[in-house]
Image (tube, rainbow, N blue to C red; front, side, top):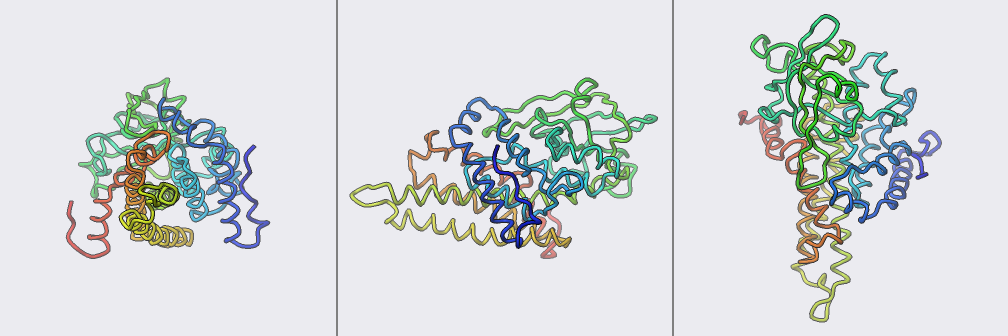
Length: 396
């Protein structure tokens, strides 16, 4: 059994808590070296064993309050966990959504829903890892989504389609955003959207179908189709019509957590680069002696350190309950750019060997590229900052 999450009440300070968490995560990840991930990548398989060990060690329930079986820590601690997973060469994408989707239930669910679901999510008997928001026709324009939830007595009838719904085949529950009031009948586009918590095992028997999408990285992503799926009205989270606000409240957490993974990736790439640059000798000298090798690695490291400060500042402010749209988006932008720069430097340092599967670089390179696009494009972050922070005209 891997080392469990430390009991934070028995540790002297938050700094020691974070150190203990990092050591425990690193120890678990040492059981899942490159060959494990390469084999999954070849077969496009889900890392069942890795997710099981993360769950049993308490890492995926870090944000769940202690009264529901979790650790009751914050986004700062959760970010540390995800960063260290990636720093060790593993990939948390198989399960990271559980952290930020769970927050919607915690913040906006009823007491009955929290008691019913959170303890089971904490102990791993239920997986909440699917997030149904994006659609083929609307993309990031969430308010234009077409999936509908129509009230019929004590039930809602769901019709529509979602895309890029990762982990749908490996999750027991899905957090779903659907329109309960037609777009032409609301005063604002953000109104009339509602959030539901679906029991996917039950839904598969009543009108839910899942189609895997093969992508350039092993991300377990899918299309999801709803055909007159009937769900109980008590699957509704919070108030009907206010779901867009509920989803937004979790998106800042998502950006911070993904940014932390990018920091971990940047550290992994830089470690690989510096080790190889020192060990690889050409023309009778280590290639790391050449400034053409040194400078891109050093610049990527500097970018990572700056992004790291932004990520953990955003996490700290989030835990303090501050409004952090600017900080969360900036952290995601800078961290994604830092990890990509570190990936580019690493491939260039290894040369041809960087494309060989056995070094794990090409796999991590593909994984790092994703975060220029997801969960939000870097271009949309720039648009957000231009409009909402700098006061320039809306560009879309």
